[in-house]
Length: 372
Image (cartoon, rainbow, N blue to C red):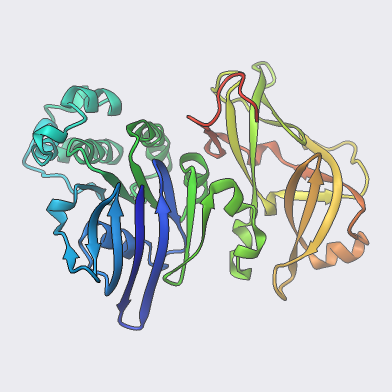
């Protein structure tokens, strides 16, 4: 358990953060400039809080009242930065060993061989950082951090400097970090990354933690999103891979409200996956449409209209079975369709908007045969 309760003033900007992070990935999510990096820098010891307390598994790292402020090298916190920050003159093997030497011998829980296998670094050991791709550098940086046998791991937007293809390459390796059984703070402003990697979410806005809890719960609470966040409003669904249609290029996902059809995904049948559906990708019809190319038409009930401030759009909450789906539509459409709570409607979702980046294995939480 990582416990954080800190305050810090940086010029006119004030940070107030209080949350707990259990084992596995907890995402610090918010817009650029929200204060996420400053929070992890306080956890690591690179930035001193004005007041507060930080502890990992009962080990106090900082306590202003008790006068405790361990330096970074004594905190045993692994840190992976956006750029990797490897030693360019050392081989990959020697970069990894640098982290290993920082771990007290009696407290090492990972060997070089295990780290190399976990992150698939075997072919890189004799190379030097200048010859590595961006994704390879980040894998080495993660390995170096893990070989220090940290009590907690911090990843500050480790994919920010990578292109789309490299992000797809490295995401599976970050998923594997969950196997380590330590708290992991993952800083991001990408919902694709958060929905795929995190179990829990800490929402940060203007230096303050505005909500924390399970990813599904936080992302589905509309009241937490301000009007300027309209494009990020959506619904997190927990689904299960029902079957694959290789000829049609479709994967069928079952959930409590029905079935979703998405582009063919390389995920075994019976495995639970999370799907993030952006509200702006959901259309609404008052009658079942015909002659459309849309692959997902779900019958439900309109239960709520509102939100979105005074702008041209508003949120609709639709009940699909026992699942609530969020749609973002114009206020003009609400008037023209004469929408009202209690009305039978159809949610229209393009399968093309449910691509592989939005499917994430719910490892350690669900598997073949387990209930949704």
